[in-house]
Amino acid sequence: MASEDPAVLTKALESLLVEKGLITSTRIDEIVKNYEEDIGPMRGAQVVARAWSDPAYKERLLADGRAAIAEFGFTDPHGAELVVTENTDEVHNMVVCTLCSCYPWSVLGLPPTWYKSFAYRSRAVSEPRTVLKEFDLDLPESTEVRVWDSNSDIRYMVLPKRPAGTEAMSEEALAEIVTRDSMIGVGEVALGSDR
Amino acid sequence: MDGVHDMGGMHGFGPIVRDELSYHDEWEVRVHGISNAMAVNGGGRFSLESLDPAVYLGSSYYERWLLARINTLLQSGVITQDEFDASVANYATNQQADLPADDPEAYAKALSAGDARDTEPSVDATAPRFDVGDQVVVCTIHPDGHTRLPRYVRGRRGTVILRYRPQGFQDHEPIDDQDGVQPMYAVRFEGTELWGDQAEINSSVVLDMWEPYLEEEVATDGE
Image (cartoon, rainbow over all chains, first blue to last red):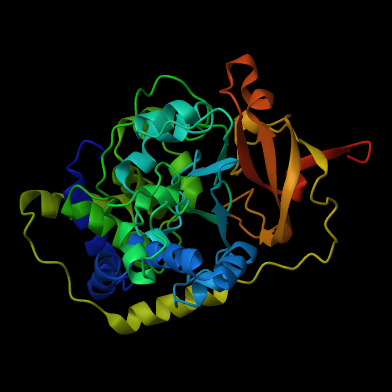
């Protein structure tokens, strides 16, 4: 069976489930479309931009990420906890799931393949600085690198540092420069970066 | 279970390959959609961990999802091996063959039957044992069922840095929620506590710890 083409196995499975009334192809299409069109890192970027622009919002966000993010209408159907951790000069946070592929998809969409790779899953906890260098991020020894291993249903998103020189920028303009990688914690936001 | 999926700290997987795509093929999109939409238990994480280790390591991400779903449905008898083989043979001959027509009524019925089975976890009224700042030790276990306690942190000492709302305890899946909800903490471990001299400088790991994972409390001299 495993030697079969996965495309064939997938279609064989879908076909049986449809036949038994345990799924509809229409529902699968809806889910796929939702991920393609509506859920992605532009959501997290809006949250970050607001936190940078509105101190009261940032306070709410760090105190209860799930509730503050729900203000945008971004929710997890299972009601999962969403914790936002703030990067500072003292602590740099990054997120991994060593056991599987847990990811804050309600704000970042689907994870890239590298996030689910054996290399990232195995190494992020034991050699985070080396991993970050592979993402071109070289942090000073004075900054603690704190890795959040998402081993429960709590989801983590990083609030990156606001880059210097962005003081005059609007919330909308800020959202444009917030990268997905910065919200996973494997990058920083730079002026002129582009999601 | 202590399988190959528990990868934290393993060596040998090489550098990070910056593959930014979520999907590479149309069938992967479909597998993701099927896993989210199906009205029967697809086996969850335990079915992924239960794949043969060589298959787990040798398959792509969505291949693992696909094989785990198929195994679960065959084991639970939702589909039989014969009908699955026949379906595979049919599409192997003609990949463009049509899918059967949707039966939205049957699907709605199956979904609501599933909802009725999903009982809310019982709420354990026990007050949390630990406070932020407490030093704790992680228990040592070797379960053959599901657990969310990675090997690399067992027996290690850490500090509670956050206390969360209680969360559904997941060990012993697929009979999930048997143990109701448990107090939940974020516990921070120094890199050196986990990796000894090989730890990278000024690094730490935070894990979510259900209270049953935390075995004992260590006196902290009021630190």
